[in-house]
Length: 370
Image (cartoon, rainbow, N blue to C red; front, side, top):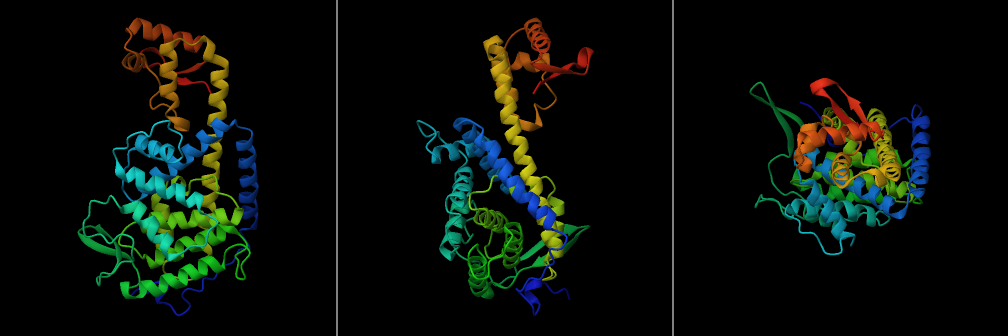
């Protein structure tokens, strides 16, 4: 019979070796400073845009990891409403968007505060108050007698990947977890020196207990972000969930392996790399905003209204770029002009270096020249 980390005599005394990690831990600190410097060079509206984009990505991706697809415009509207950036609050149709937006904002706003049972219950209520499942216990620990198992079906057989502590143990386990989290914070007697190491352990520790009926992954990632923000002294500028969602299989495999032992060096290696990837993704976001600003500074005065409409639509795709590029057919659909006008506009945008051409002949497409 398989034993999990919480069933072993050394639980929850995690052991690890950082000897192969110091260079990457230093790099994370350097990148935090570099990203902060890049943000400081943006105008206030652009800084706000960058941070809203970051929070939207975190809200969307932390939900997608759990198989929930939330309306992106509703998430953006919820965040802007909460920040008071809409002169008149925009109606939000997907109530899950309001909940995850509240969670993302609260994690950033309260990062300096100690973790408490009440705060975790508040986060759970924010996240799941609009849940369609009537029997879901919201704002309290799980209580069912049945085992909390993570399972999947393979070739007609159910495979148990992990089984969490029984519900009767959850209150005492969470008291120990909350005490550990607060005692290892910066400036405390048992402080863990490196924020990424504390974030990695905090996430694994929380997920191992799996204290809620639902929402454990999303709240566990919020706890990791809180640990990082406390370690660096300001809300961190990265989206862990964006980095995780890019390769969910690696994330679940790493968690599964780590749940079998309290020697967590490999898990910390994985998590540190995750943080570095998240930092690089946010750097790309900042560079995109800078390039977008330069683009409009260069071309704004030479674009007509329909060209500007198309370019703004393409910009909405972000760093991934407008899927498939811009074709005459897409241009016609967006602007309502004839094929001749669409073709003429596209060729003009190419001739002034606003667009790059990809493909040729009937397959010709255009991308923004950023």
